[in-house]
Amino acid sequence: AVMGACVTSPSNAGASEASPLQDGSSMARVVKVGKPSTSDPTGTGMIVNDILTPWEFADTDPFILLHEIGPSASGFSNPPVGMHPHRGFNEVPYFRQGKLIGTDAWKPDGDPANPMLSGAVQWGMIGSGIEHGAKFDSSYKGPMHGFQLWVNLPAAHKMDPPNFQDAEPDALPVVSISDAASAKVLVGEFSGAKSPVDPGVCRVQYLDFTLQKGASITHTVPEGYSSVFVYIYAGSGRVCSQQGKRLDILKVDPSGPLTITADEADLGLLLMAGVPFKEKIVQHGPFVMASREQIQQTFRDYQSGKFLNETCHYSLHKATGTVKSQLTLR
Image 1 (cartoon, rainbow, N blue to C red):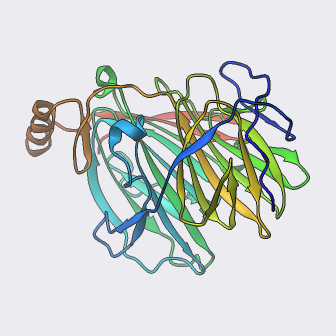
Image 2: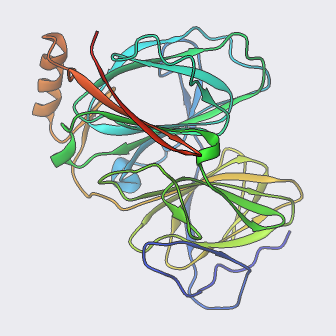
């Protein structure tokens, strides 16, 4: 399919648009195309695509990493992901397809009655520290495809108490842009539809676009959301004037609307847009802090048993509303 220009259209601050192509002069542009590396971050043999590795953090701020798990046609045979610690950021798992049970220090057995199902997303404000893991349901034999996104926390909030939000699939709006294109709103707003997930001090738009072959849309990210990435997880097409295909990660300069066009097969992609914090970070494995001294203190806290809060807050977003709870360490 022939790609249209990325063109100017009226925009509203803090909102995004999807509209038919139109003529104009100002254009978004793709400034770099990268390919993911692979890694085994959990040590269980579950190989992931490490998508943001072509860039340094200063270029991805506020995003730290994005991992892709799968796609697999028939479940995972990997052992459970054991308990491991984190501090200083937000973790945002999104399962397009699959089923798992998340575990943590306050829910060591997870919540089997409310597993993470296809289309669900979580915003885990880790803050001062968590320990968590995951169990895969061996009875589930369907396709598995998921993503794990890390979003930084500003230095002033790295020691905030942890808070988990889980959004069930039916709680997340899906916007029909046309008969051949839609957007699932994981975090933030899109065309008047708002995710129930509250990203707190972070300003992030996280969308899952699906386009049927030959479809075209334009999209304007919210004003000030200058860190923009597009990851193609299925099919091929054009983002602005750049041809891309599965496994391409594109960094976009959002100087105007960006146009997305599917080729001769369906196109699936994630769009991440955020406002950078422009703060120094020091990452050591699962810890993301603002200084080396804070990393050293994190290790001391972990080794001395002072790492975890006594309580953790939870919100479960359902189509019918939000259920809030609080649990205490056992």
